[in-house]
Length: 123
Image 1: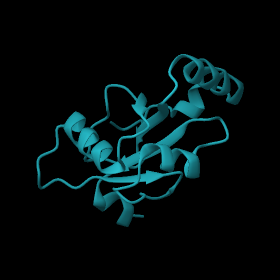
Image 2 (image 1 turned 90 degrees about the vertical axis):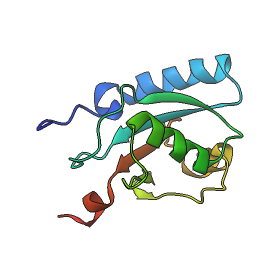
Image 3 (image 1 turned 45 degrees about the horizontal axis):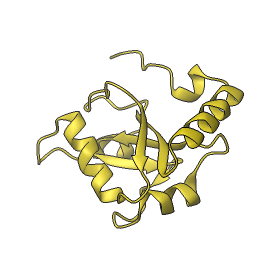
Image 4 (image 1 turned 135 degrees about the vertical axis):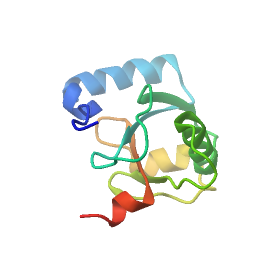
């Protein structure tokens, strides 16, 4: 775990990401293209087996948090915090469609970073 894997933006050029989004939006209307990655300095939480997701636009942020916790196999006492575009997480009652419209990246993806509470307070 000493070397963090490359982020999605580091793996693909802007043009490749835009092309991916165009294909996805044509094939899956009503789905939000999301990249979920671990905070680079995170040491306690595991990596997800995949980072690219298509999420139904009507689901709430709270539901997505529950799903991420499940995929990470966290126990109820373990904290996980999500950041969207380097900011704090949106209201849990907000739909993914609302969040996407407010926070999507210029490439068309919605980027979410997860970390434990200790990570955000560290140097």
